[in-house]
Length: 256
Image 1 (cartoon, rainbow, N blue to C red):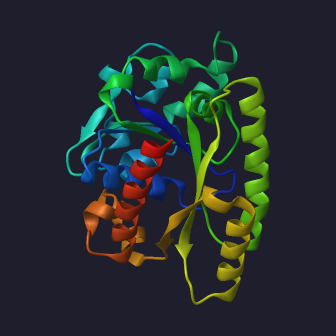
Image 2: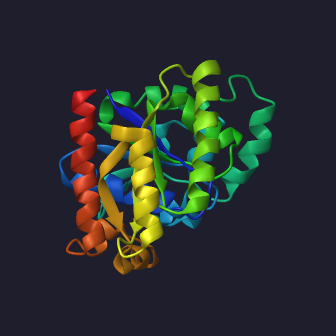
């Protein structure tokens, strides 16, 4: 049975998509079967996995409207080693169309239940806003992985997300919890980042992942080649950190 995790943060530009595709590639490297679900109409996780979003015949949009199954719409990223349920600009229209439909916030959950046994991990890349798309992700997830920069404004965004998760937990998905906070784009030379990192550990304790993802040029370059950084340059510090993070995730899930 697959463990389903949303990669979410209501603050934009914190590396959600980078985290999603590199964690997926890292998990694939350590022998896990992985599906990435791109719930962002920008389709960055799709493109970053080496799949052309413009050429998609079927996407997560079709799955949400129940005109296609996950098995029909998914694509395999041969270079990255995992499957992708892709997204493109069509998905923006799903926001409006879902409002009128029954079970609107549970459609993704129903679709993923059918392929549950085919994967060890399902990772959902959520848009930064709390939308009907994000709600679909949160309703089917066992937990949320929160990538965040160790900066002051990131703490404010985190409190918003914690409140959202509490509301979804109370009303729609009793399984939902924060699995952990992942410190990304970390530069130990910056005093403020160390201070915020210490604050996070003091407040959230073992909810803060041990692995820290350093600020790394190769991770930033990788999407322009249509690859996760873990595949683009396996020897880079960023790639090695994500593989270590994948191992930490596997250990955490085994202990849950």
